[in-house]
Length: 305
Image (cartoon, rainbow, N blue to C red; front, side, top):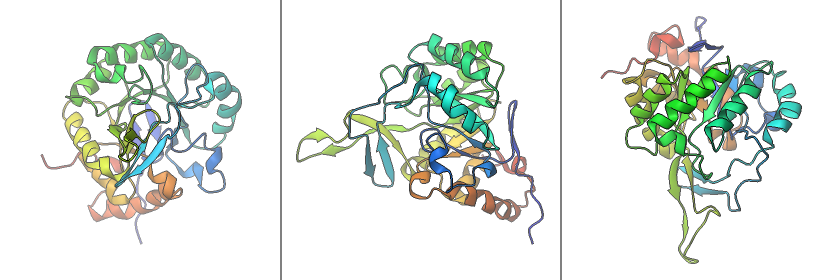
């Protein structure tokens, strides 16, 4: 019999009962998973990214399956902040787990206004700044320039009292520099990584398959890239890291934890195995015991360097 394990984890001022979260954009507004997933067991839920105004997203095709991954160009299709606060948040706050709201804007002021409105609402545990969506005009700029990243994080940090998480793109030369800028701006944690920019081609039509041309690659194909980014950033900043990218098994989770992540987000795997997150929670104690750990904190950042 496995002794009780401490699965809780701390991300700056954000405390979670376990490190398993579901990534924004892959879990809808959580209603879609009702009756399939035991949501209260999750460490946190991240509903799809919201913007100031409703967005219809990009033209189809919006997704293309690739070798060991999924290429998407959804374009931040969402109901807008007003509908989110009036219709979705009341449901989300009753789920029995932490709710982290992902927001995106075209300007720094957009982020500030969204953070101020969302952060003032009961039931919001933290705000994730989507600084790195590759499918929206202007949506990636803040994640590719260190000073822009620091500025928008600092401005949102001043606009709300809830914890701020900065989700960063791997589509840069030195992600550690961007992460350090986010930390300097006051981020409680950084989320690594968003999707890797890619393209799918129909050679017969001689056209890109996605309506947007390029899109973001997710799934198992990007896990080595995500682990590399976590490894590099763990050596550069003192704030916690949330690992994202191709996580589908408990081995994947443990690889991110020992590399330096204090929590993880499950994304693409939700599409083909909706109950994967709760299964990972069940499997974590045995994995921790295997390496002689009694808590999540015992194994975070223990990779030999």
